[in-house]
Amino acid sequence: MVLEKLSNSLKNTLSKIAKSLFVDEKLINELAQDIQRALLQADVNVNLVFQLTKKIKERALNEKPIKNISQKEFLIKIVYEELTNFLGKEKSEIIIERKKPFIIMMVGLFGSGKSTSCGKIANYYKKRDFKVATLGLDVHRPAAPQQLKQLSDQIKIPCYIDEKEINPIKIYKKFEKEFKNYDILIVDTAGRDALSQDLINELEKLYNLIHPDENLLVISADLGQAAQSQAETFHKASHITGVIVTKMDGTAKGGGALSSCSATQSKIKFIGTGEKVNDFEVFNPPGFVSRLLGMGDIELLLEKAQEAISQEDAKHLEKKLLKGEFNLIDLYEQMEAMKKMGPISKIAEMIPGFSQLKLPKDMLQVQEEKLKKWKFALDSMKKEELENPDIIDHSRLERISKGSGIPTSEIRDLLKQYKQAKKMMKMLKGQNPEKLMKKFKGKIPGF
Ligand code: GDP
Ligand code: MG
Image 1 (tube, rainbow, N blue to C red):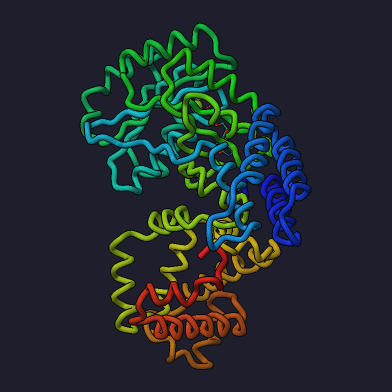
Image 2: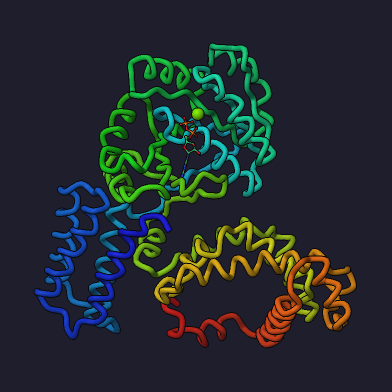
């Protein structure tokens, strides 16, 4: 996961609280020191760290727990709340106005991840049923327009570029009439190695021409706390409305980048967590901190699930479930949808309580491998077998095994899993969701 090291230190700190016999000043001081150490290691600014732990200590010593909460739980609550405040308190969402087009412009230094983020943000809104296009105005790097084109092709949206033109203003004007056909236009701009007067002038000109609704600064997380001065310099020079922090996956310094950006006037809107187009999420401090502390992030989980399964598919599946008609094709489709949500290890960390189980990494890996093999087996089945798996006898099993290259024992595993899933569904059928929640309450941490 992102910030794994910080997350592990914080989780250890919390489990220390859970294991302690009682909450006293010594424990609170120890807790503050642990948090300081963890945050400093993540390159968070020293002053910010001391302000934070001072606040935690003050609250822990002076506030009394509200009823029904033990002292220990209260202490954990304070840590959670203060860390959340520290990272910006709440989600700072972009409200997309229906104005055809709503324009989002990306600015930032060379290599910070602007073009990649153009693709990611386009994908994010396309999945939410907006009509999106990209516009490439990086005229300084020869390969830049093609890069944006490839990213746009990958998510199947139009991309406006002109590789022969060296004046970005002319490129914008050339295509301007077409943009009203889209809900959102995402504009990629050029960067430099440092924020120079040249770059400021170019961005200023583009800003005055395009008047973007959002002007997002793209910053790489590996800058650590140095992100703050970069964010402030850009803010002064070019009307920044928000920040995207990229490459959260590749650095232990991400804590520094997030906290120092949160300390500036512009709020973090998204974070990039990998090179792929889906490695992107809305930055939601409460959910983010919850995941860091090993408490999951239900909101993000639901969001990813919604992205992966279209409303129509979900309705279709629900109907089948209600009729008890769940077959292997549905299992297959579910597996495909799961795959779209990302690797199992990433999904697992969003589920409350899951990361507290401290599952070994290879166990998830094994599960992932198994799914891959099952998919091969399903590909080798005939339609009638998928629709009615009960007809799969020994000779059919042999045939499927030969066709897919998967041993019969593993195909039996798959069929067993299917039967169990079907049984579960029957049990859940017609159950009142609220009653179910009650049943699970207390058993799954975080529920
Ligand atoms: P630009 O010059 O600002 O347009 O930067 P690019 O979008 O071309 O990205 C520079 C490099 O960073 C590319 O190799 C990207 O694949 C990589 N990159 C961008 N965002 C992320 C991220 O969130 N995680 C990782 N690991 N790599 C990223
Ligand atoms: Mg670029």
